Length: 235
Image (cartoon, rainbow, N blue to C red; front, side):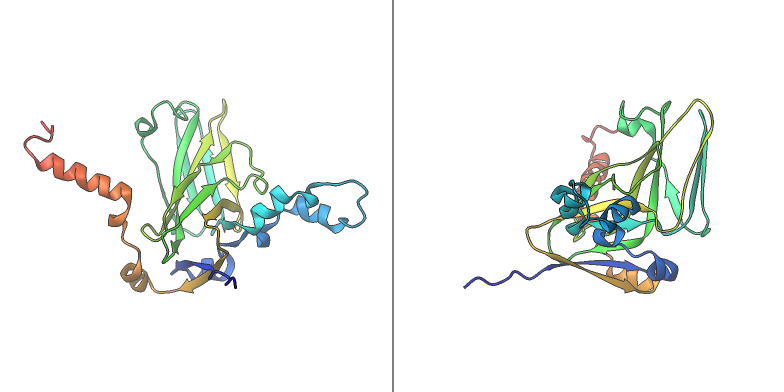
């Protein structure tokens, strides 16, 4: 007898009431793009096959999660400057210095920004989650969401790294509340389910998976310890 495996639970936790009410990260099937929905309306009447028959597309949406924008966002990029704002007035973003990425996305051509999502992602099991750009849902030319892997058991922060293309003339990028920003794929053979929790800032602080357990943090800890050592290379 074969027993069905228990699904993996992925929890999204926030203290932001507006995000909880209107912009929950959820299964991607709740975020099918409008162009696909239009095709699906005449699915049975189509004499020829189209994207509604594509298993590569439908399986991607069945097995992934979309993280939508939690606020209207505006970004202005010039040849040597940039400025951004969230309409909610509280969301934050930071920039990584260009030297950290070497020749990848040169500063003369791209501007980096890392958005701090009000949601935290938790999982009690040690799985990886792959992040990628929601190619089929985004329609803003010049915006590239960077891919990567995280382990929500050890690192709960949801930080969205974005590259904005610089043009010859100053350019403005913007998207509205609910715009699909990231498509996440839990790397597990088991089914997954999603839970949403609204908690206070203090409750989240006390339950948040510790960053100190992440590989990046462990690396930083080693570097800091070496810097204290007389043989660590620090002058």
